[in-house]
Length: 258
Image (cartoon, rainbow, N blue to C red; front, side, top):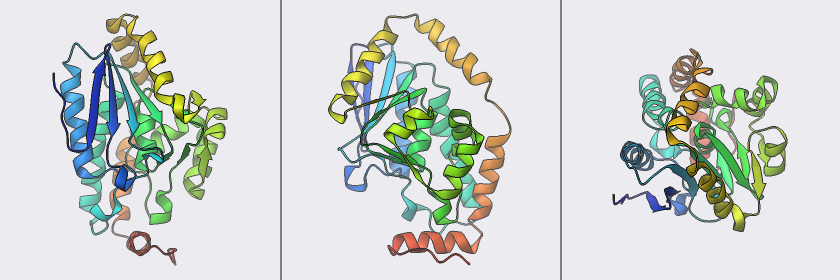
């Protein structure tokens, strides 16, 4: 099968699909086009017997994904905000988490906001030594809307997740490894080769057993938290802080939250 997309580069070799999020001019920020391409790829790859493992990474050396494309939703109201979160989770983030073939996030550089949420939805993560990971949504008057409030506590613990989300601080690659946010840290030049090493080991095992393992492991995580996150995310679009936070971002100034 041939894979051609506007915002993704896909190379399939030895049963491994290397998927590069390809908007380097915008530090691979998640816009509607990129999310749509990812959703289509996942649907196609599910049925492609030539793909047993997927590696997700970002184009360039600076960023995996630097966040969502804020200009696309800065003028949304609450209903549109809820729809943004719900459709993103259903069509991409939950689709990644529930994908029957392993998805490895190879985090090169910044993974912020929706970028970290994309990495957390993947089945596990390895990072380059220059990676920076965080959820800065509160600086925009928002909360994470693509599963971040649910997945981060499960990976690093409730207290650390609370602090990270409230402060909007970034984790270094070393700290991310210490707290279990990533599985391994390697030099950037070695990142894709290491991801392929792990993927090759996985392709040698039973794909049917792995599919069931993914389903069983994920079954322990299903709660109502995602619904609450979507509702809260949408409600915040009606607040002054969201308007101020996004306006300040676009104007490249510090927000003045009352």
